[in-house]
Length: 275
Image 1: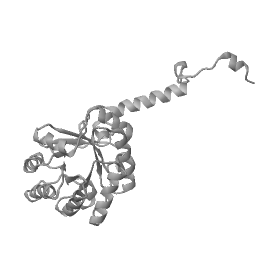
Image 2 (image 1 turned 120 degrees about the vertical axis):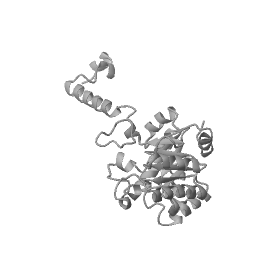
Image 3 (image 1 turned 180 degrees about the vertical axis):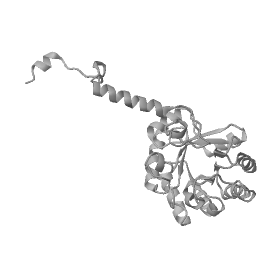
Image 4 (image 1 turned 90 degrees about the vertical axis):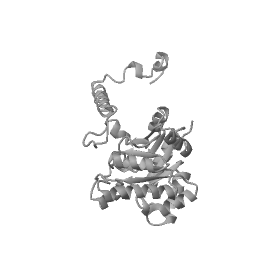
């Protein structure tokens, strides 16, 4: 059954937790879709985990469209949610609607995600008026890393916590159909979840949200240099992959791969005719 904004809201109403994972390519999309993940997020995190950038700021619209289209081709049931990259919506309402439209038309997304609260309500309203579902993103918003002075937990004071609650209500009023809450205290995320009628998706925001999202490379243990507090390794796939790569290298160098089982033959009488 295809996941839609209506089925996701129904999950909130029935207290059926929503599952979301980042996804950036066709093969992974097929696996996640078959596993029943509700939402596949083509995050601008692809700048770091796929393209090797230090942050998300260098990701372009063309990058997002390229990866979103690949995911859309692989997933049949999951809701395809695409990030709007840095400066694709901040400068003007026109840019916001045009770029959201490109993600839908060229990338075949089912909805778009953008960062910010009250400051982007006009963009949210305009995009929704163009019949494009919008997911808002509050708390630690990576595109604002320079303004925040680094990747830091948000909403730890009464003033900043209240602003998060107010922003959540504002983006819902503007038409957002979902809200990602990143790196905020769990009690604040739970309060926001109770205060809005749209689903909340947490990442480093506690179990009180309507659903959870993780970067799939994080949850599979594919990065070991730094593991955020909110990440759990559900499998050590990184170690398995490194072992497989090492075994492949060893067998190729030893001449034990390929064996006859992986080799095509030819009839002797054909060989005899060659000169």
